[in-house]
Amino acid sequence: MRLWLTLVGIGFRRWSTYRLAAFAGAFTNSVFGLIRAGVITATIAAAGGTLGGYDALTGVTYVWLGQALIGPVYFFAWTELAQRIRTGDVAVDLARPVDPMLAHLAADLGRAAFVFLPRGLPPLAVGAAVTGLALPGDPGAYVLGLLSVAFAVVVSFACRWLVNLTAFWLLDLRGPMTMYLLVTNILCGLAVPVQWFPGWLAAAAAVTPFPSMLQTPIDVLMGHSAGWDAVRLLAVQAAWAAGLLAAGRLIFTLGTRKLVIQGG
Amino acid sequence: MSSASMADHIIEAVALRRVFGAKTAVDGLTFSVPRGAAVGYIGANGAGKSTTIKMLTGILKPTSGSALTCGLDPLRHRRQLARRIGVVFGQRSQLWWDLPLRDSFVALGAIHRLGRDAVRDRTDELVDRLDLGEFVDTPVRQLSLGQRIRGEVAAALLHGPELLILDEPTIGLDVLSKERLRVFLIEQRSLHGTSLLLATHDMGDVRRLTERILVVDHGRLAFDGTLAQLVEQVGAERHVVLDLTDPAPPLDGIPGTRLVGHEAGGLRQRLSFAPGETTVAAILAAVAQRAVQVHDLTIEEPDIEAVVRRLYAG
Image (cartoon, rainbow over the protein chains, first blue to last red):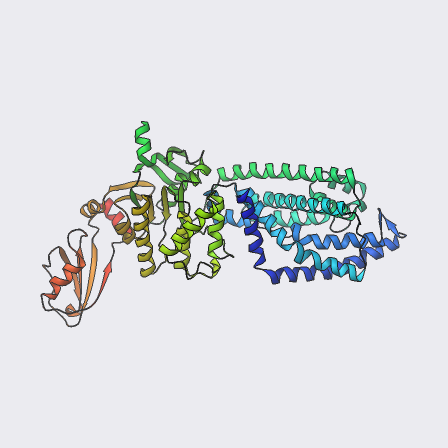
């Protein structure tokens, strides 16, 4: 246990050296939050005051929670592993008595823990001041919500890990990574809530891990899903996390088997 | 292979071979390293040194042949083996780039499941012996190459491995940093009996740190023996280049040396000598007896490529 706590701590400390970047990111998230809040308010108004279970206030709350989670859950290009594979630095990971994927996961949880407040609070504060937020009064929603955010980080990490693993077979990661970001940003519920998707798209999203990365923690934090419904969503997240990590581990092993470490 | 011979050897490679596409990087290497020994593994760029090391540490799968490191099959027991060996890949870093050097020791201590006190004591020892005190709290990305390599070696030795594998550890280091690192490694080996496999380009490293040399060329073992035997076989002499204050007649006939050349009317003279037969101090004393004043001197190590070339020519 001390091993994993230390690795989480190291990830936390690594990111804490880039405080300015965290605040710059929070500023951007807040500005985009204002734009998105304007768009969603207008959309809900045009739909007659409610749309897919959201009214004006819950609509903007969905936007601000989403903006707050972008940083911690990480919806950006992450290529650290791919670079280590390409440069051969993955040899260093393999020369350690620890599972490389779990070590990277621990570091990513540390990263998320660090950026949680500096990137999460500013958009929520701006939202509370400008549009107001509809947050539940029940402390249980926050406990389940935090757990759901943690699962979202694990699912996000596992997806990014899998995309990075293509570096074992492909020379250039830009294609898969761009495709991944495009698909994630839509299907996770960042652009519009998953509840607004047309039937076919909602069905497609439901069989992917992407809603588990954003829509689920938002639903749980807002109290949209509470009680056993929330527990069921958390179980879905946990299943995705376990399945994706198992796949990540298997493919990593296959990749190292054909590995040609270049240079040095 | 009897179990006794396995226990005696820290490394056993039998017909080890690795092919990358059309290129055979390692071609049927067979050698063993007794426990506690220090072996230099030398060869030109691309000779197969790093590939061998990766197979011995379980990072690369051999195309055929087998290896046993610390008595373990490296591929099947890679993680178990990692607890018992320390590796420095000269061109790669195992340190956490954005954090102070000390944090890397904390992380590696946890990874190797050492107790907190053990990590602290061992870190203190390494900081003291490798002179890391000045920069142990500096982020790794701000360290000079020499400082970083000392940090890398400390990181590889933190868990007290039985076998230390160094892949080009002194590449790019200045003379002083090289020397400091060598003194440290000699001391650690005498204290802990650590076995050493040192892949290098640098004959100076080999001379100071190892008692046996394996020369690899095009993935094949070209030589296995002591430095003295190598010198005898191919004449891997060192050169001492003397710059004199005044032109002097050729300095031939100095015991244990051979005059290779003289330039500028005898202002610069080049003598070759075989290590073990004489010392630089003895040569200087003999030169002084001829009433010649030495203004400056440089010592040139034989170059690995030339040694390997001569191994084949001979």
